[in-house]
Image (tube, rainbow, N blue to C red; front, side, top):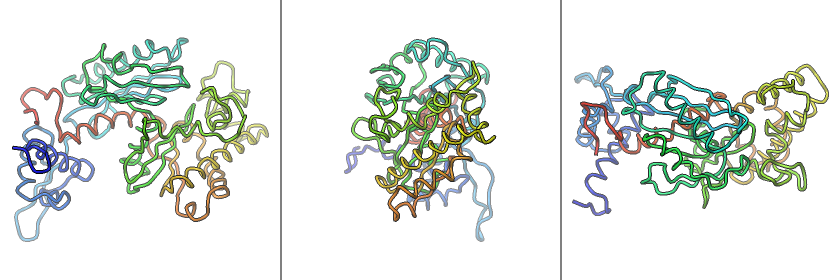
Length: 413
């Protein structure tokens, strides 16, 4: 029977399961009484929902605590091994694929450098599919227990029809020459696992808010500083996507009219001054044959050793970065700005004081005084982990439903 709100009884049950499961996942272990208090559901509703989750294996009992004068309260949690997640980072120099359990513990990983083909679409698709097979085989995981594959990519992602389970995702990656690439459809031809595809900076932003330095904030900006530069704007706890899901292309805001040529084809972009690729290229002294990461590490080492050119280049980069952060402060008034990505975490300990100083110099005083600027907490491979949060969110939002439940466990409707 449909409810007055237009929701069916099934919709309401799924909504209740989702509320309980999210509470358990982010705050567990919890008792039934704590779940009722935290979700606003009645004790009877919580009891029914918990019964369904226990029967489906989406929750498990994990001990007890004493109560005031009554029977001990049974504690519940989401079992980490209930299901698995795959995260994929399509980076500038490699495709990294990792397998996680529900606690986001990495179980297996596969790093595959891009060949001379670069970001040729067929080549990238092959690396993703090969990586998925590799990590599942390495950990001996049943595909039936994999919630889905999350893929973080550079560029703008059109999601398409949600019912297509990622097959409709189209990527516009101007810096890697991807023009309306039907990545979801191409991956679907090689795997039957559910697909979730999004911009890498946006996935990083959500993950930092859930598990990293953004926890507890409602308004934040998470900056991804790698070969290029991107950002995820969090407004009232939710990533801001804009009309075409392209919000957050911060690296292509202009810091110098008519300035350096950027990979996007325009001039004067922030990325052309602070992106790792641009920094290594401008320095011009990286060891022959070194990777971009090795080149940036060499630049940092030269600056630490007092080499004038390296010191000046990183000082300039910190000022550009700080000025661009000031723009974010003036535009969005965030509580926190977090700098992540492998390059951000590599250079951050040296550059952060200068970045803060520049942000203070260029931002309006009132919002700057109320905005903290810090490094992210999720590490240099955070995009792989954060991509895995895409299928994780689907699992939590659906109330623990799996596309193909393991044998012996009921499907949640």
